[in-house]
Image 1: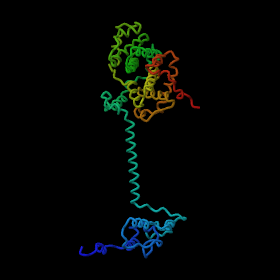
Image 2 (image 1 turned 60 degrees about the vertical axis):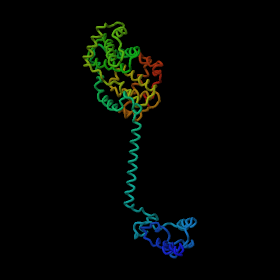
Image 3 (image 1 turned 120 degrees about the vertical axis):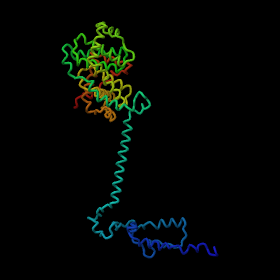
Image 4 (image 1 turned 30 degrees about the vertical axis):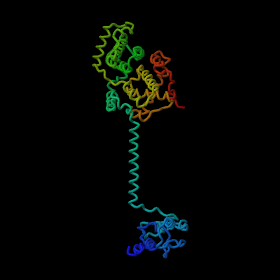
Length: 412
């Protein structure tokens, strides 16, 4: 080191803190806006008069750093004293012009700040929309549990039901078709279907078989006039065709002749089968209410109780001729909504159900009130086949549930 002290090399490069403070005081307010809002500092030492001056060559220690943090804070008098300098953008604006009845007017926000706030709002709105989309997709995915089930065809199920909704009108018949029948009426049709529901239950057939049977009967009667004594034969043949389409094990013709108390011969059954197929042009692939109710029950996240009650109510609708005015998907949605009202005692139609059924609660109310009426008289009327079927443990005693009376009660 040449005999010189180590501290002597650094001495020429050091600057007094007082000089730094003087530079800060004299700095432009645009560069140091915080200085403008503080009380003027002493010209001698650049700090509050109540504090002693700072030594220029004081070594930097922890104690010294703590003292510096205290010195950089405003004096107590400065905190209590109101700030007089409020304009940091225009130096020449007089303070009198900024006041209105003792209050400071709102200053124009700089363009940079306005753009910043606008960007923040837009970003927040974008994040909210994205979060809403994520949440919407999460609650709408009712097929996630069946992703690994090839029979559930998760990749195509939405397209399939969109096609069913488009084609369901082809499976419907005119609600006034019975007017062209000269020997049968709505009451006879109801007796036939109520009896077929018992036959269906006795043979332990699949649920979709019953709905297709009723559909074939209505479509055939809408195109072909039938005498009264042949109406039961039409019902038996419709069930035979539905079994051939839906079932694995099909009842033989002799069994159908037997349950009709041998009112018809084997030849008559086969002749009616050919007539019905030709009349319907062999069109057996139609979306019935069963197709839709299975999907809608999945959207409603149903348990066994809700499922059994929904099927009980929709089978009551199969018996009633006046329900032909509703499309199968609408009837399925109304049955589920009525079942929910029956179980929970209050109208409950979620956004998921509304999205998958495409029907709102207000649209279903009228049909739901009719279904409640059928439920109320299902035990006391002459046609009690559906009620007896759903009054056993196999179907969870669904028929014994108390009807949703509040839906049909007149508001006070």
